[in-house]
Length: 173
Image 1 (spheres, rainbow, N blue to C red):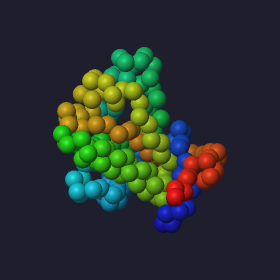
Image 2: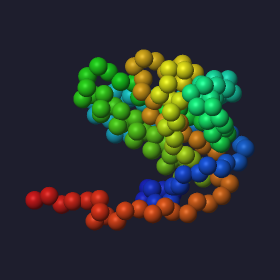
Image 3: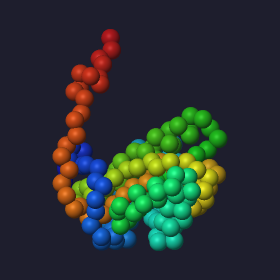
């Protein structure tokens, strides 16, 4: 297993994958790892949905209904996981839980990368449509965080440019 700093610095977004789906045991390991994301009040707001063929077909139809042709982008990877957050009526807790679920999604990406899997976090427009929500069976109290593409790596990705630390950090008096 790679160390955390290496995982953070070498994880890349991949848009081309091998055909082999990620096995259930590996997915369970990744979800177990993701549930250790920081979460104030330990509400465990994250939810993970692994899309099977029927769910993918429903989501593709919803995507194409919203924007014709966009459903094909959902077929890039052999395994798709929708990450969502269960949200409460409390505004502060909603914000904390939404951010915690985002952290859980990132933990899932890092864990997948550490296991040699290519990955890609997308937030396609279909996740914000009623038809897309229905396709994924999201409850009224759930907010979709993203669609995680997972699968075998087919190619290496070069590191993207990043802003220097001095451009993003400020030391306050």
